[in-house]
Image 1: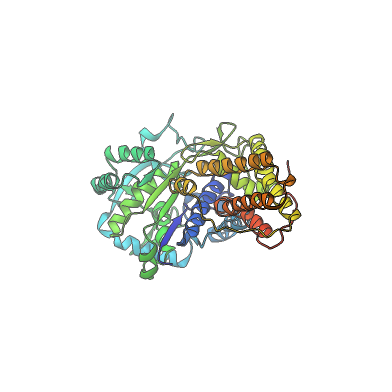
Image 2: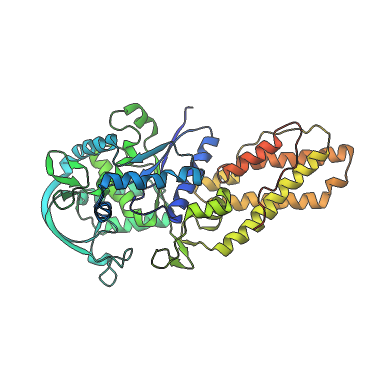
Length: 468
């Protein structure tokens, strides 16, 4: 394959179990990866776990185990997502991997000209692993973690000269107007950078927080978790040793939540510039999933476990809901009643009914059926290129509804001879259209349909989606 495509999610912290928000991110990434494979491209799809920093150190300490043992145990929960959500990632990176540690230290050296040591005092949110300026606080608290008290920190650390990259970043955004998708997120980060950039701390004193990657040449300091974690996007490609793979696949597309806008589209890009490496190809920013209009949290009792959801209702119905119902660019709500409504209306009635009717008609006929070769359709392709998963699925299901209407109107079960042959050919032609178009979104369902209809004799099987 001549064309290469690289895609990565952010890396979730292992201090909490996988939640529906990250499930959505990795499902969307998987949909994009499968789409590019259908286009004939060689795809590297990266995800993994972020395993350093204060939160993980504290959790391990509370449990009386080593941070590494804590990470080893909790990383397994994220690796389980591959089977539970039918994810086709090629790379799973952990930031405690020996190669990643070496790469992070090499990256530090590449940025050395823009790194300096200084004393400072900040307000720090352990939940975000970030310092907070007064303008970012709401009633003196971090808006993302309002229940966590801010820490005041004063120590001597290394700083990255972020302020140096204001003009280069603005030039990047100007030259590449689709660098951050959607466009209003690019406008948001542009405004942020225009207000001026403050240098930020990229290390911690080892005696206070020992769980991190050693700073090259200074064993008293460990790397700040954000500096270390961001490097996974290139270390997973074998950087710096494997120049061939890195140069073939970098730059790549990154998917991140809106709370990662600053880190992914400004901090990380400045770090790449400092290291003399090309900026990312594109950053796709998505919103949050709420429950009943509220942000999910254990204290509110509205956290949704993706493992329980797929075990009860199946993988593809969960994929379908998250891709179809949650807006591509904004926040969206997860409602079990709405989930069941969509399941029954779209999957059991529309799609399931169409496949069942088509198979039954073909089973009764002894006539040979002409097969067609289809690729992903232009409207679906256009929508996926813009990360508009909901629009792509709406187009597919519009065609499904029309196909059902056509079958009801033409009544092929009452036809014979050439008339029946033409009707069956049209039905199978639509099935052949359906398989590649459903494949990125609902790969298990697409495979079942393909298996059912690929043989010389098609048999009516059990329903794809029994009503719930």
